[in-house]
Image (cartoon, rainbow over all chains, first blue to last red; front, side):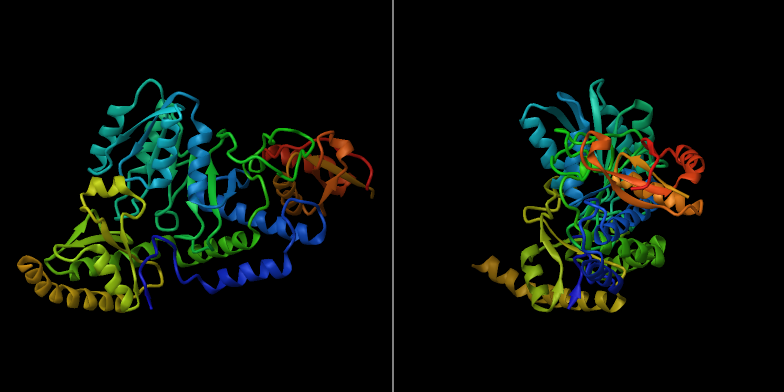
Length: 383
Length: 75
């Protein structure tokens, strides 16, 4: 099996992640933040250690690190919880549905106005597009740090500085960048950072982070038990408990802690250079009938073939035990922006585990498919 | 030395306070606080030797960790 769908979720997970999740269930299986018996205490300490580690990783204090079910939940909380009713949201045209759908839902509910800025050009063009669309009532800017269908990276620090200067909260979708590109809330001017646990941080599925800047206090999206102030009818004001109604996923959090430590041990720069080198050798090995869409100098490459559809390629690769993702990758705006075509694209995404042999294997299969596609072209033309 | 309990607003703050106490070599543990004390229901606190009260609260204030009242007797 060759796994090249790491932008969807990284696989395999480091052994330390699997061990940590299992050990949490075996030895710290209490409900964190609910009571003070030994198992609840062990669970709460583990949760806090993960907050502390994640906070250090993203330049925030532990109490500003909120656990969620994933980046989608984090984005929903940040988008819905930070914008006052009736105000204007700006978001980029490389976004994932996790950004697009909550915003469109708010527009349809009459809660906000929204507009996209163009993130397809160079950094100056992106900033010019963004600046040109800011209105007096713009109250939120949402940016995709790295697109999920190519390796395009937005100039986070410059957008953050602009938001800071204008006093507009800045929400960042770091689904594809966390663990690949260093992020620091303060340095990058970020108000709210949405991070999945199971992608570049190599943790288990089921946990994500919403990391909040100082003074940023979104309204809760979920209401329920928080382990404190249980006689009050409203959610507590204090973070992170304010945004963490319900029981936290302890095994996933334990795994995420191990994942972050694993990434720190490997080094973000080392991981990025490795995946970028694999992407580069992959794209340079594709034949002339393949088209690469968008930048491919990171961990993600999208391509199409001028005869075979993405689905045909994906199916053929799966039959050879090679896992990629085809279609629109939950990012129709990004596909439209890059002009991939009516069937989307094939996405290959690398992790720290992939090797040059993996690239060689997928290229061999693609070259074979490419050769076979000629008769099928003749057949289609004659039929 | 008798123990005191410092009431904390959240479990996260209680854990933050416990770690700061550890850095100061003050033996401390997180405990549940009687809801009757807080008037708001479930709450957490930090149990520690009363003699370390000044050192601990000033360290918490320096690190911007908010805390409630110091309850004098061990529970």
